[in-house]
Length: 152
Image (cartoon, rainbow, N blue to C red; front, side):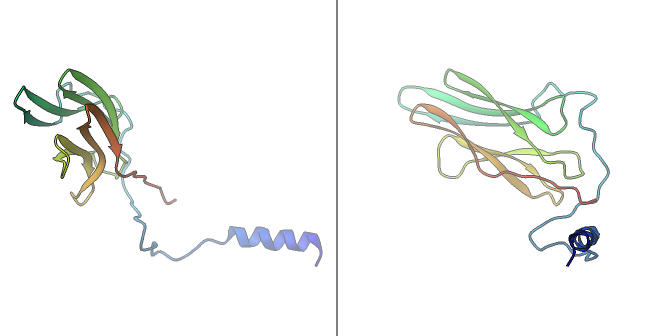
């Protein structure tokens, strides 16, 4: 076959679109209005907080984690306080086509600990980061990553 015909066939084959409207079973296709990337007003108070009192024979300490809005709609500031530590981290929430809703739940096995995450469009909590104190060190462990792809 002549190279021109091969190139023409490949070009035509690449232009064919998949007319199948059913997404793959392991994907989610969202059709939504765009949420602004920046907030008009930032709430300076914590939108969610979690605290846990840790008692020992020597002291009583409070493990506290709070989530704060930032100028960016889908980014939150995490403030962590425990003993003499005051640390910060970030939480990125995917744009699911709804206003983001974040949450903090108690960690399962490690004391003190909590899990920060967000609620999806079905109001199901999605874990993002585990925050805990272990061997005199504050640790933040990413549990899961999330992403949203637009189908155009």
